[in-house]
Length: 393
Figure (cartoon, rainbow, N blue to C red):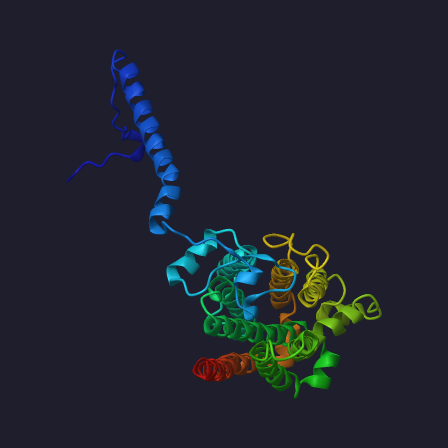
């Protein structure tokens, strides 16, 4: 038999350092830490040199008179990147000062914020086994998609005329997916029973159709970019997107209209989330920020008031990006709160088993395929147009 000591009797082993050695040992530890810090600082200081070695001859930016007409933006006079450079140049231009730098970084940082929010929600929401969480998942994925596509478009579209069209067609695919994701989240979580009865059979089919028409309208408007007047092209791009937004957000509009006036039946109000609903402030925020972003998308302000002074910072499109990122974050937060607080209502409206959510997830994949096909079709039209133009020279 072995005699076992109790935990209380076990004494940890200790090493006694003679007093004469302690000062030298402390000095050694301090010097080691200072040395590590010095090495880290040296590495940080070497980063600019490393970037210079990677791209030793980054071309400078150009004025609007030095680039083709299709590449110019109204009231932006300088900061254009040269065409037909290597791909590495355009990727590294992420760290260069040009007239697309802020457009790239606003949606790049926005996508990182959405990704962080996604990871936070993944710890609280069962996106795999809870079918009722799939509309929220679609919203998150589509939000990441549109910001990532926008980032790529603004970063790489200066490569050539053909790639300029292709990458912005990709951008429009991302926008269309975000429209679909918004429609699913709003119809599934934010809809009120009365409005659901009115539109239940037509809401998602119409949202899917408008999503595809929006992609087609934006791609075609870009394709006819310089053969149509600006206002005609804007109408072709803005009207389908505006119709999609109005339809996709109509459950939120209806709920916001009911919010101040619904006080008659406390039980019904509490069940439907109308009174004392924390999500309503975020729904109001997403509408306000989206309308603000739409204003700056359709109006080139403030660069129209200060031509040539907003080439790097202060463009209306940059403000459009910023307001749209804030709108998306409000929308995600509102949908998450609705997912948590309105479960009895949306399970009653859409079914306990989540069959409707499964259908919407499949439709999300189908709309992606359709929109990608539209973008590829328009890219081929651009390719044929450019080839014919080159042969006629």
